[in-house]
Length: 120
Image 1 (cartoon, rainbow, N blue to C red):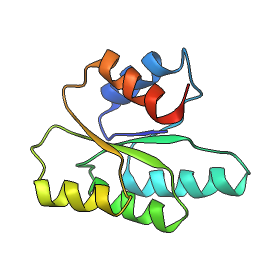
Image 2: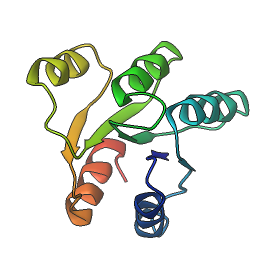
Image 3: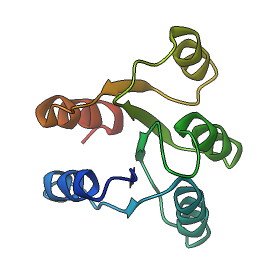
Image 4: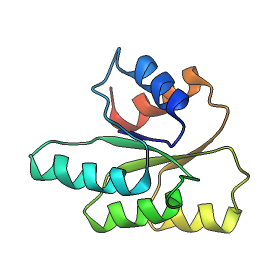
């Protein structure tokens, strides 16, 4: 699953990743949580969430915390902003995220991180 409020980035991620993975895309934090819950209720598995940090309706760390409460998924946080080291450390230590990638995203690096984390 990819959550980013920038339509061009969502499309780029989808085009790049759909060659190897089933990809769900959402454009807000609220939709991300709703889609995650819906897919889980349908018995589907989401292996990884690529989550933008600064969404139009909420921050990525809030989305990550909520999804973790819902018996979450591995999350890679993506940000164009320099994130506070304490925040990132807390998110990693408490199992909310597994990694952070800085925008602009190197697609080869992203593909490698995805493969490492979901074993495909």
